[in-house]
Length: 466
Image (cartoon, rainbow, N blue to C red; front, side, top):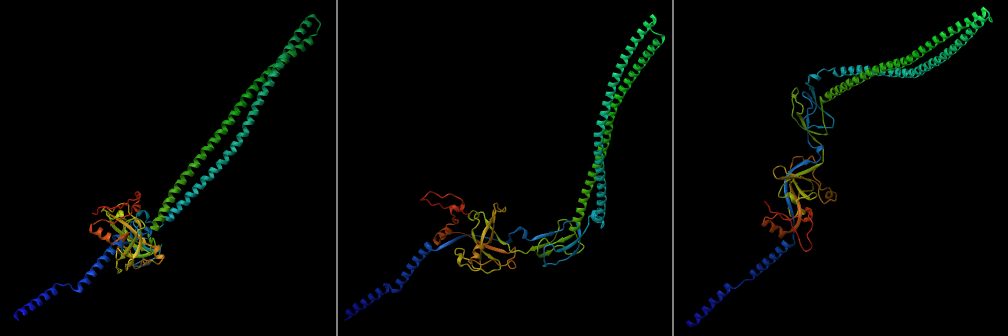
């Protein structure tokens, strides 16, 4: 009986050991779950997309340079006389902000503008008188030219008449000479006939009288010829005298006209200089009043005490123009700069606006705003960083795919902003592998302006991260 009982006890112990090492149903379920999870993770790593991005931080700016905060400066060295605005006051373009009193001794005379205008009137009257004199001399010169044109032909005619009288006198002398020869021959015949007794004494005396008369006529003709020659000489001299006198008179008038023109030019030069002085004084008077360069809000007054002196170029106040032309200025490193391009989408998180951003899945981001890259600086800022300017994505906002940026009353220039520049979409597994190996994001060759490789080859541009 003892032997049988011992065998039964051994068999019972043996059954209990087998139960201890045998598998249970719960382990199989766990194994199945682990296998399903492994398959799911593998599928997720292969098929779940991930949006690569480059992050940067910066501030809100005003994109238009004419609408950015401006310094209102003093244009002249002066003393602050009166403020017309206060800190935080909204002003319109051209509204009077402050008034200054000039310190330059050249512009202290309150009647300076009036005196300059009086000098201007005097110089203008002087120039008008000189112009009138110049016009009168011009008319006189014209009249003298007409007189010369009439006197010279008249003098030429008189000279020609003198020449004609010389010719007539020469003909008279020749006739008198021939008459003298004739009377001499007649006298000689009378003498012969008288000696022969054929002619009376009276006939001889008459012949002698004719001879004497012919000689007298010859001398008279010769004298007339000499007078005609002298008249011709005088006529030629008169002609030259008329030309010389009229030329001298015209030269005097031309000199007087030149003097009048010189007076006109010098007076005009003085008027121009005086006009410049008058414009400077007028501009100087305008510079004593400081006006708002644009509509906006006075941010701060830097010279608050009336009576304080200021230098030219010193900032009196700062004005922030009213504008909605906001942009985000992000700073990225030189390691990320080659990856971004104009037109890339950007997700932005503004300081003071609660947000939840998943850089890989921008579609489920909460509290962020969309934008597009507008400008990328061509050079760095001296510290190997590059500036990227992002403007609102107006196309997405218009289609209702994105929210518009907050109003400028809440999104103030200078506020901090964080941004994620969206790059290519890759699989989640590739992104984890890239992050594990510290590789940079990938960029398509066509986005870098590179040519595609031949068919069958795939090119990825990668760079070594710093």
